[in-house]
Image 1 (cartoon, rainbow, N blue to C red):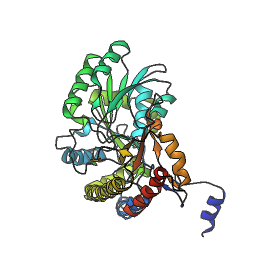
Image 2 (image 1 turned 30 degrees about the vertical axis):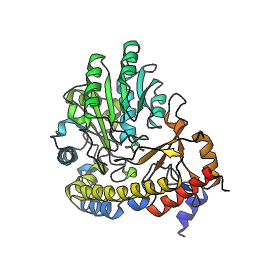
Image 3 (image 1 turned 90 degrees about the vertical axis):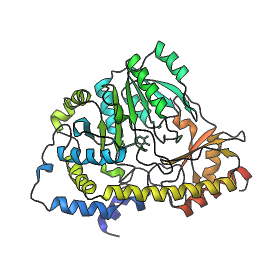
Length: 388
Ligand SMILES: Cc1ncc(COP(=O)(O)O)c(C=O)c1O
């Protein structure tokens, strides 16, 4: 082993955020497998970008994000979303997590109230907690958001923003219908709050084309739609975009962070210009859709055959199965048992901001190939049969 790599391992200086021990199958993991991250494709674009004479992408970047990149991205998104996206309405981010943090910094103050869905992406409330925001959860199940409850809450404590994952939600896989989207937007205007739509999975529909991105509604100043390359290319790129009305974008671009450091990630943006321009991003998304739909089928079949104690809605996109336990066991207990069988899951409680959802758990088909998924589910099935 090369000396430096050896030394790094000895000193426990990891490269990857979550290292899964080789004997464990972590079905809960929500990141793509390394085998799905296209190094060759990124290498080809990097070589092109680094061998040209224009080195302006190595300068402090324009605050809104590299204009050339925003143009290419707007063309790509217009094709994917099937409506016109203007580069004027795009702002470059370091990914959705960064966009959420920036939105909290610029649009809220400590003690403000915000709403999240119940369940929600478990790491978003961590960001909101960093900003000392008061989090209220709004029930959202298979039937979607409970609008009656929502309006009751709005009458008492309206939020600064409502954070939603409208398409192939993490963890539930649920997608808000077109009607629900318009209903929510009407409420946001009536009660004067921002809708922050986290659309990490908008472009990963396998059997269903989802309703329009919230980008379609950004003629309203209170709608912000967030996209990311993490799930459609590579999380380590730390690149994403924010879609909003130009007036809202302007409120973001005048912040101190950008004044000092310039626009976010100009180097990676330059690289991504080429990945998009060459058609490679589109090809990658097609490949992912193909791979993930096959894996969904494998996971579904092995679940049906081996774990009758769970029910779920078949996912049409995204990364996850959200399973409900029907045998009275709670997911925290299941997780303990699962660990003994060298398999892991994410218990529903993690996705609750009110300590609920313990009859649910999340598993993903993004991290492992079909064979490993099947083996993982078989290991998990032992938790129900009592096999040691
Ligand atoms: C719903 C959702 N939002 C945001 C993220 C993180 O996105 P990014 O890598 O762009 O920060 C994830 C990652 O799992 C996610 O599932």
